[in-house]
Image (cartoon, rainbow, N blue to C red; front, side):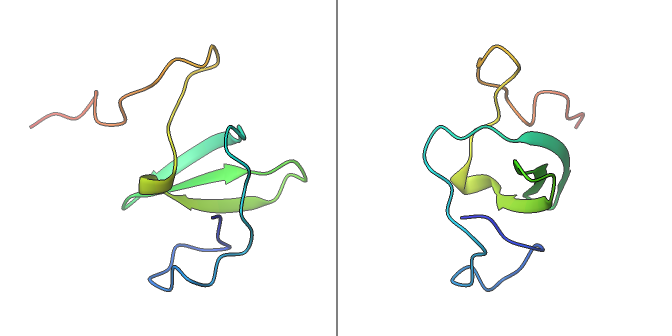
Length: 68
């Protein structure tokens, strides 16, 4: 599911994307990823429902650059 803004109301999704859909990643905020859909609109995806991949389709660890 994708949303207009990050929300606690997960049942009010704007749309559902088919599995395997790739979107351009823009930023991450508190577990939400902002991306651009095919129409160029900003959409938000909750991290539990997506996988981050690089341009070649290889899985990316979103916490790889965290410093403790």
